[in-house]
Length: 93
Image (cartoon, rainbow, N blue to C red; front, top):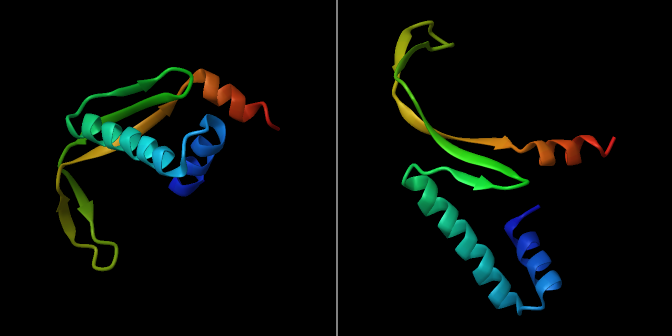
């Protein structure tokens, strides 16, 4: 599903215009981005949690040369689905 598909679904289910639907979808994504940028967690009941985690600096190896390199610390985004979402996905066998 793409962002355009989301806009179309909002349009069909709410009765808003396509322009308003696109603004709604963009606003939700912008709010999620800014919340995650601040390092805050997003908890969506019945869906899951988005969490920004810090990965520490670590040693790695260049696979081509075998040289040891340092992989710098960075932030990563993780998603953990809720039990409700897991059961919905797994019930469609």
